[in-house]
Amino acid sequence: MQEKLNSIVEEINALQPANAEELENFRLKYLSRKGLLTDLFEEFKTVPNDQKREVGKKLNEVKTAAETKFNELKEKLENATAQSTVDFDLTAPGEPSELGSRHPLSIVRNEIISIFSRIGYTVQDGQEIEDDWHNFSALNFPEEHPARDMQDTFFIDVTNKKNSIALRTHTSSVQVRLMESGKPPFRSIMPGRVFRNEAISARAHCIFHQVEGLYIDENVSFADLKQTLLYFAREMFGEKTQIRLRPSYFPFTEPSAEMDVSCFICEGKGCNICKYSGWVEILGCGMVDPNVLENCGIDSKKYTGFAFGMGIERITMLKYRINDLRLFFENDVRFLNQFKSAI
Image 1: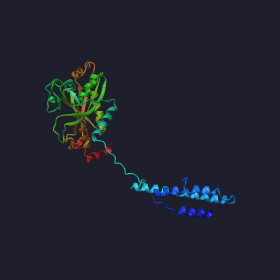
Image 2: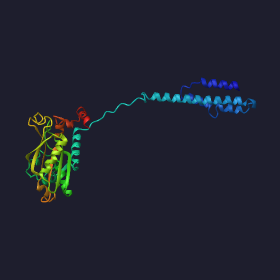
Image 3: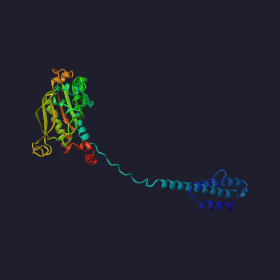
Image 4: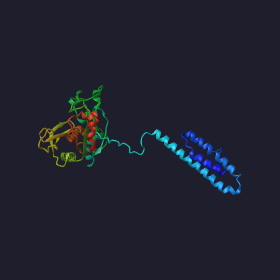
């Protein structure tokens, strides 16, 4: 039996199954319940007692050799199968994902919100489709005002002229809804998209974005407005920035003003950005007209307030020296990739 066992060991070591089917045949022949090893252990019972120790040792060696050979061949075939289905190195580092960028308008919008949030302003949002009352009448627009003309406004429904429906032309409508729905004091900004029926060019678009602000409380003065806007200008454009307020007209504020900032490109010396004046216009502002307060159910004898509004596109064009408004709406990756460092 010793010679038989030695022969089986040599046979096991010489076998090299090439596929799963041949490996299974190997298992069935040697390791299954009806395999050769089972027969050998049955035959071992007939071995004389004086030979059992030596034969038993050799029989265990045969069993170990068969199991070891099977496991090695199984692992080898599995690795070969996996390698054949994967044509790349799983241990190699992955390709880096390119970092995206925020839109420049989003960057500036978030910066404006952050600046005013630091002095207690909350953010209010509103609907883009508005009725005549909230978009015009409550804001003291006379019926003959040019802003009501079809050339400026995208009207949706003019069946009832006094209650016509249109795409909002400014975010001032959000101010009206805020004042109607609550009680002073109010200190909020209203960022959002607005629509005007204008020809698209490098300097104008039918869609643009605004941030308007409103502060109403007792004893609010024009001096409060000036200090608020000076703080904003220096936070946005630098601590050396100066402002000037020029008289203007808006139906919903009285007195009204346009605000300029000292040119942060040339520092007031004169350049093509400021048209060699040293100043750049960035927003309109003024004290809320008492009629607007009364229209919204607020006692104009007790409360006063100021409002301001700016175009995000204009601020962004100045900040990043962009000379064509249309670039903001084309989503050209070559343009957007320039703002990765601004995130």
